[in-house]
Image (cartoon, rainbow, N blue to C red; front, side):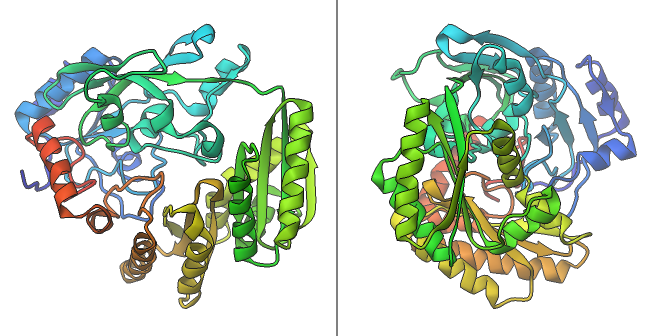
Length: 462
C-alpha cells in the first residue's frame, strides 16, 4: 500500500478514546513531542497520540487502525538517531511509556519480565538489591521496548551481547490485533521458526512489543576501569583489535578520538588528555581483574599506548562511563543550535583500523565538525557529524557524506548499521548490503504480517 498522510477524523479520535484507559491526545505540544527524536531528520507530527495501559488495549487499537488503515508508530523514549519514531504519514503515535511495570524478577532463573515502557536505568535500579543487572547499555536511557525494536547494543556487547542475545521471549501484537507469545524462558530453544529474533530489530514494522522476558546477570565481584592514550586513531584501534584476538576477558572497550575527548571534558568537567583514547572495563574476581588489566597494559604499550591508568574506585568508574555515554550530547553541547547525523557501521575485526582511517580521511575533506568513537571490541564505530537542522541543503550534504562512508564500509564486508537500525535514513544502504533478493524476502514477510502497511510505514524499506 502506498501512503499519503493520514489525519484522523473527530469520529476516529472519539472511537480511539473508547479503546484505552490512558489518554488520546491531540494537544499541540504533545503532538510536537511525538513528532521528533534525537536525529537530525525534520520533525513530523502524528495526527493523535494514544497511550495504552495493557496488551489488550494495544490489541484493540491495532485492530481498529488496521480496519481504518490508520498508520501506527510506536513511541518510547524518543531517543532514536534514525527517525524510527517519526510518523512519516501521520496516523497515531502509540506511546507505550505508561506500560512501565517490572512484572517479575526471577533471580534464580536470571531473568526478568517487563513491559516495554520500562527504562533500562530504572530496571537496573530495581535489580541492584537482588545482586543482578541488565547488561545492554546504549548511550541513551532508552525504553526496553525501543531497545528490542531496534536490536540495540552498547558498550558491554563484547562481554554480554546485544538485545538479540538477551531477549528470551516476548508478547507482541500483530497489525490485525492478534496477540502472540514468542520464545520461552529457557537459554536454549529449537522449536520452530525463531519469531523472537524476527521481531527483535524489526523497528516496529512487523508488530508492537508489549512484554519482554530478558536475561540478567549477577553483578561481578569486582569491576575496574582503565584508560590509555595513543598517538593516532589507527594505533588505538589496532591495539583494541589485538586485545580482542588475545582472548583477554574485557567487559568494555571503547574508543574516543581527540575531538570527542575535548567534548566530554567540557560537558562532564573532566581533564583528560585530548588525544585518541581507549576506555576499558574489567569484570571478575579481584585477582582476575588485576591480571586482565596488566595483560591489557602490556598489549597497548606495544602499539604506542601511554599513560595507562586503572582504578577500582566506584565513583571514578561511574564518572568515566557516564562521560562515554554522554559523548553524543557532549558533541551537540559544543555546537549550540545544531544536531548530529551519526553513522553506525560495523566491519570485520581485521578491517577496523582501515575502516576508521578511511572514515576520518573522508570527513576531513569537508567543513563540518565531527568526532569518531565506538565499541571497537566488536568493530562497531560511529561518526558524529554536526549540522544545522534549519539548513536543508547542509543536511542533504551531510547525508551524502554519511552515505559515502557507509558504502565504503559495506565494500569492506561490513554492515551499514551495527545497532541503530535502518529507520528512514539507511534504506538504500540496506539494498546495497543485502542485495535486492534478500530485501524482497523481507518485503514478503512484511506483506504477510502487515498487508495494509499500517506499522511504521516508510521505515526499513520504501
